[in-house]
Image (cartoon, rainbow, N blue to C red; front, side):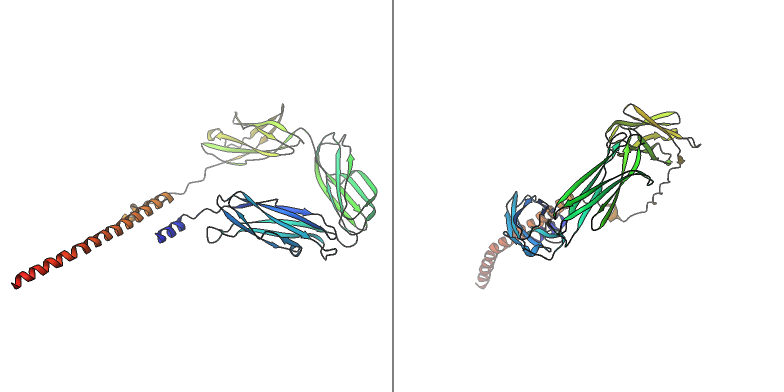
Length: 404
């Protein structure tokens, strides 16, 4: 029986389930002598009792105390509790981490991948010596006539106050031609402080299309940033399409379409005219500047070899957009010829593909047969043992009669 179940386990391994952790990460503030407590909740999704253990690694590990080395989880979830205590001074700068690896300490399965594990992180940002700042620039897309908004996010990550800094915004066309520039002066912020500064620009008279916003933050150092954005219009662009199409009984023709609008375009669909017949695509909805692919299925006999063009009309929000599409019709790829059948040995002809269920049934039948064999043998042995004395007694009586 033991051998049977071991063999069965190899054929049908127990599925490996996972565990979850919440939250996946912490970001804690830094201050000299910082102390705090935090908790990770471990979620048991294995559907069986589990004991979870935790290990802590990373540059912050020496400052962390774990109150729970293991957590018993009969089901549901469990919690690991920790505390962190930082000294007044530490030789660390920038983002530093502690990595918490939570593993199942009593896995029911063995071998590679059988031990469930998940990771969580704690991050703490340390100041840089002297004066140090970070600067990020963004500019959301807008539609024609709307104001453009440049957004600068500044952080003082140094140990000293930044004073009288300057921030400039430059609104440009895609080719670098300056439309307008604005400047903010006298920026002052303390260590650890963050600022979000915004600058508006008018777009009246500007056509839809791609534009650029550049920015420069000047303090003891200079940081340059640049981002691209779009000024949208309520329209779509017809992009690439299927250029080589196999002539099949039903051929697939695709056309990629992109929204030029910051907003939703509803009920968009395409009408593809090939050889005088129109084929329609399913209806879709596009969000901000989103792309999609329209699919058409055309009968092979409707595709013309002579180089005629198809015509696509895109319908959306009561508007249309048209374009002619050139394509090349190709012959379908020849399917590989089947290998000639050859006579196979009887064993191969009688071979039956075994799936998991079939194998399990066969193993059960073998087990029952083996068990029945041993029971029958045991019964036969008992009967032989029972009959043996009678035969010896009979033999003794016969010998006595001969002597007389």
